[in-house]
Length: 242
Length: 204
Image (cartoon, rainbow over all chains, first blue to last red; front, side, top):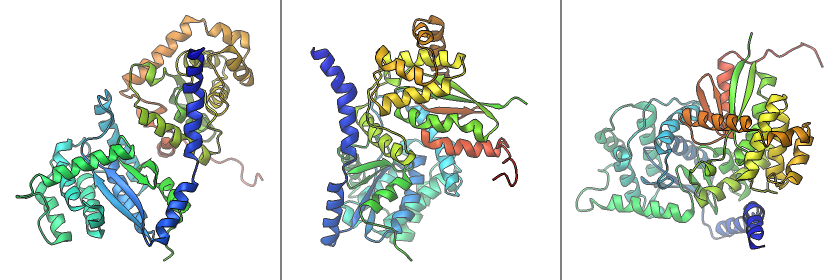
């Protein structure tokens, strides 16, 4: 009875296998030990979107939380295109994300000011700046993280209405001492870097933002801040005592 | 005074609904609220696509959350199709006899933690009986078209609220989506002055 066999396979065997394999932790722990032995740092790779209020919570919170862990770095990967292809609930999700982010912000002692969804294209220039400056990942440092935190705060906690590029260029200059990337002759470099991040996100498996990849496991970062910390603990990158 | 009402939109095919259920049904123990069970037809049976990667991530994430919550998870039998509908019909019957909490908790644990095949009587019956329901009444519920109409109405009600997934809890017109948003609902209930006073000073 091939039908019954297929039914058992899809309903019972495969789900059980997926769950069981997700609990296997030794390869990641061994990999983390090897990284430390080689003097390499752990990584939390965050795929996020500037037009996503839940990404704002994730960027602000993870920058602080990962910053308290010696030997771990936050790699920031801004994207613009994400989500489920042809999702009929896309607009509802964008609206609900504001409600949800407002509650999450409250948990962190923050208040969301923006009350309406932001069009992806309005904030795309920020993704292009950060993607261009942050590729390769080794080029990322505290200034880029600080810019992303400040930009997210400006976008979602401090302002409403239209996004003024000049405000953000000012935040950039304060941290980098120069103009943001993406001016001629490299005008297309930022957009290309964003597309690379989007392809990388698909390869890493997350289908929406904000998604944090932590050595073979990914989490919706705004939902699972505590669990991301526990993952780092499990891999041996505990919070620094200071 | 009539307690405030919380609508609990739930799917037997949703592992996050399973994880939410014990805490959702426990809300009246701490707050002056009634929880109204609203069973809905699974998203994948409503013509909404669930990408493979989303399905895989949900299983992995739900397992981690189940471990945190101390709930069994992993011996699964996916109830999509007849199994999900049969559970919804029995749940409506359970509402009528005041045992929806017992049935929803037993059935969802059976599906997600014990690999119960609820599409078959041999899988569903023990769960009904563990919930204190008569199997003959449950078998009759499976043929009751009025119960199916209630399930369809609750499914439509979720869509009318402008929402797509479960679990969703609705309090005073405000939606809380996700098993991990119950804590935000609790904050809203505290803000609304619905937290019960702690009883009996010096009561051991």
